[in-house]
Image (cartoon, rainbow, N blue to C red; front, side, top):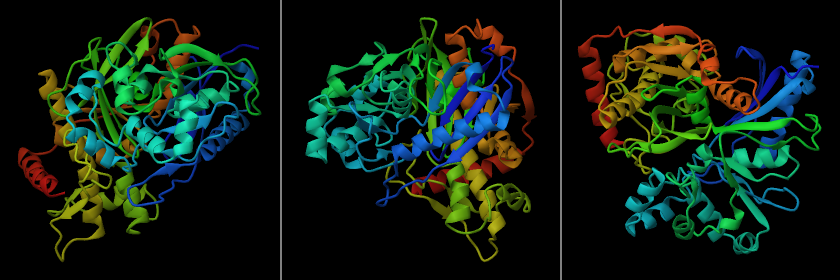
Length: 493
């Protein structure tokens, strides 16, 4: 029987999606299993690793039930994941040690403030391309080890393994035989040197992390191991491609050349721009990150993050009960011609690039007796698009070149009004592909390259297809007014 399909496991913040991909990059089947978020204290966000693992098993089971295709036809498995989410597990049993601390969690803010106050920001940024912020893995791990002496002792004794979710999944998929991460995920920890692509001794000492708990850093397309001892996949399938979700989306959008950019609209919104084979520093608050390592070459990217995007619509639904489901937001927002002066800064988990204000909180300005739920819905979509506008301007200033086209993907990219608002604010065209699950697609593409399913990037570029292009249609006065109100509101958030 031929090995003519790839399995992509997209382990995200609120659920796990399993997709079956064929040689023409067509999605043959797709299943998503949600899992709970845990909020033990204000600003804290946790996941239960066993609930994540259960969601992976159930998604893969259902995928093969849906398609009727047998798993022994798989050529390889690719993984993409929520990146900075941090966990520890026992090497002997594979059992998690406590909950995973999610990328959104702000519990290590005080540790970050102490390190910044001590003057380490410049050194850390020079080595990692990142800022000292609770967003990244290292200070989450510092918090774990400082707040449980038994856990710290076990880590020092080599009993525990650290990983982001990709490492945990490879460990489980390979029957506990492989403890690896790829360079894109490692670049999000604050522990890897961007130039050497290795764990850095000075950074590990700074964040009080024993190196014996860290995974091996590997390329983004490589055979890390094979499946073993699972009840939902047969033994011997190569686990072969891996990248953090946003890097995987950049790859899945076929942004293989410097200057090409994409924005993924999910729980948060993340824009990445391919900057080539040198890790350029940003002067405007962006991150420099590894995009992928492939065929012996490393590609880097500028990244800007809006921590809250689709989550703002979820808040309208769950927190304010303005919507029965998230999909209703487009029709509600489109029922009014504008937001009638209402501005929403969706800083519900602080502000990311280019502001980097972890203390910022969401704010709604311009409310009057005339304000309706529709105005608030439209202001929410505008707030998402305005965050991306700020990031694009920062990227253009860093590179000294204007953005010609923004490729978009993720669940919220299906919102036509949001995409039109984005094009209008940027005054640039926005391109949506046929397959918006580009995060999973990217991991499958990397896995396929690793096992010879495809032979070159050219094969993949030819398969990428545009579904719709949104062309700017606003007036300069509309754009200027919205930007002025936004800039004032951000200073007060």
